[in-house]
Length: 291
Length: 95
Image 1: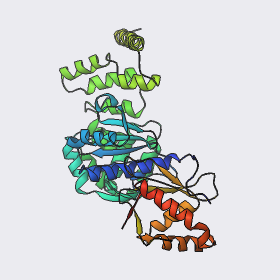
Image 2: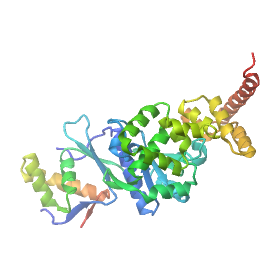
Image 3: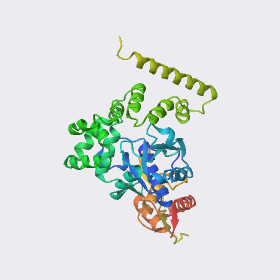
Image 4: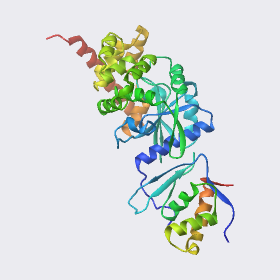
């Protein structure tokens, strides 16, 4: 009989669950408040059976976000994308571990427009616990988890529709409560789009962020998303920042795309491509609607 | 000679059973910052015994010999080696 297995492939679902458990242990040891969200951290009945997750998502108390990233780095994870480079929302950092894979550390949740610490406190006040791979992980309440799944689904053109339908069916008796939570978190725009809430859609159609969330929900192309971001920006300064930001090269994303450290030539090529793209956006915009 | 030291899984240890191409279930365990350890066969049975509560080496040998239908003498060295290895890896503690 053998005690230690020879090299075997650990299933991805197991790796993701172990990652959740290790993050919970690390956070507890370092007195960092963390909520485990989506995927295997969600109540089992909020996703259809057999749905696979590829990473462990956690939401950290915003002022402890950098501390958690440091702790994870001290335990074998390395930063792949930082909070600044991760997404247009600058909400999460992605960290990679050679055995356990990705952990996405969220310091805010896209779609919640109230102040991130206030949003975290609202979730924290009603949190539950779920045993994942032998560690008790703090998770949002069932209703809050349903809201998080629905809102996340609104920017996931691939699985969003089926996830939303499933979660709404699972909490059918509490739909009004869910809607109230969406209002409380200032998340009516993505909620209304994801759930096709007629009343909500009528309310949010004039909101500056409506076009952005519509574009995310439909998997709009880069140009459409860029325009939607400009439209959603609440000040001229922010619009300029987004426009200039589109020319800046995201080192982390470029490295991920190339699967190696970018060289000077890579940066130059990327810059040329972006400049050409910006020019084409400009010219396309000028000719839009003209014969 | 079996020791009366009691063993228990470390409180910060994450583990999960999983199926592979092997006929029996495997278990993968790790603590923060440690290397993953994957146990199979007797190792899985030892881990299973450790999940119950503090167990002595002889408790574990008896439990496994009953489960596997083999004499305690056949597995006692295996159990001792595995417990030592798990303890050295920081996955279990002595109490």
